[in-house]
Image (cartoon, rainbow, N blue to C red; front, side, top):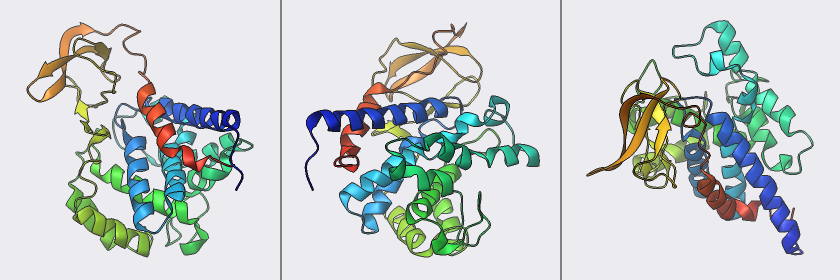
Length: 289
């Protein structure tokens, strides 16, 4: 394969970075899913390698894992940020996000890398998924893989109406649904990896070595970026209270100030360093396109 010219590769990486930033900002709208995209990408990358993918293929699948919820940009805040369970009509609206994401990427130079995952990550082998009710191998392999990682992260993450379940419990559920909700071969490998501790540094984290935190006042997820420093102020996206990162024996912790956050402090704080790191890690997936 002919090597890409440096300027062409730079352009592809810039396109990739723009997609990752877009996905990151969509996720920032939901106060409970912080770090979800990073975790799904990391889980997908690990499972892809374990299942026989080449490093380049694993990078491509990780990118798709990070972008899988891009279509949630079209979901109203009242539904996306609802603190309780969704009713049938609201869930029907949520179910539109795979198609929205696929339409958004139509014609994008990198669409071929990820669009199948974005469109089909909620399909199930038993045909009870959405948006098309595909079964078994009708579902693209990458979508089956990312969908499994997405479901596992949903089970092990906190929501307003429930705590995240332990890893062991989520793995038991996946094992009980092999061939039904989850691909048999991929699910079996995933369960084996999880029981060996492969996901302990991913679950409950938003970056390498960075555990999630929660608002001390109201509970939703707080994401500490790589650039966060002691003394930095920021706002909780749910209760809009002002918090500050404070040095403790357990590392940086978010502590409330008792004041309302300013508009600036409530702006989603893009983790540009994380994005740049991921682009460098996954750049092999866009090389030579």
